[in-house]
Amino acid sequence: MTQSIKGHCLCGAVTVSVQQVDTKVGACHCSMCRRWGGGPLLAVDCHTEVEFSGEQHVKSFASSEWAERGFCGQCGTHLFYKLLQTGQFIMPVGLFNNIANLEFDHQIFIDEKPTYYEFANQTKNMTGEEVFAQYS
Image 1 (tube, rainbow, N blue to C red):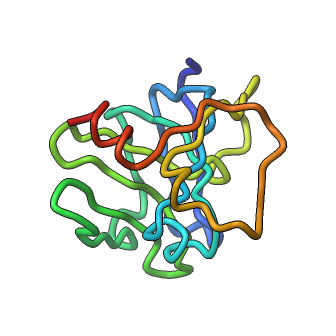
Image 2 (image 1 turned 120 degrees about the horizontal axis):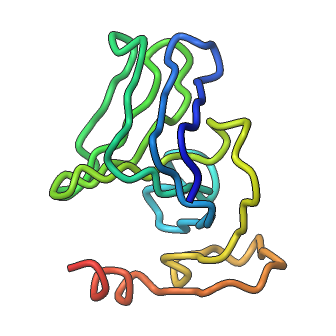
Image 3 (image 1 turned 180 degrees about the horizontal axis):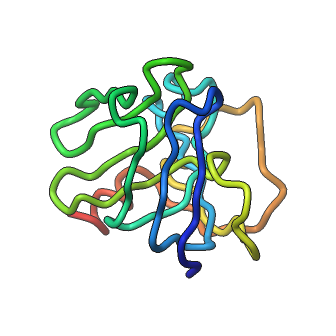
């Protein structure tokens, strides 16, 4: 885990400061993430201590009963997937420039991954059913 990481959206209207971020990068292949970004979401767990500046530009919507997704209202950059029950932020790894020692180590909703791409990394792979069983 790393401490005090800063990041920003594409246009710079929103900056984010994170107190803790895991260095394990995961890919989500669920249909919502792929529709949201045109491909899998590559993200890191930023826990709950996340602060935004330019908050007036942060827009969000409830993508399910248990989570919301946030984005910059100016440029559309994806900012977070937030679990409502815990307040945990899962954030696109591309928001941050200075995270050292990242490791791509897991993929979720592997059963929804389309056949037209494949990652070469050896990772822990979980189906959607396994994800829901682990976190419910």
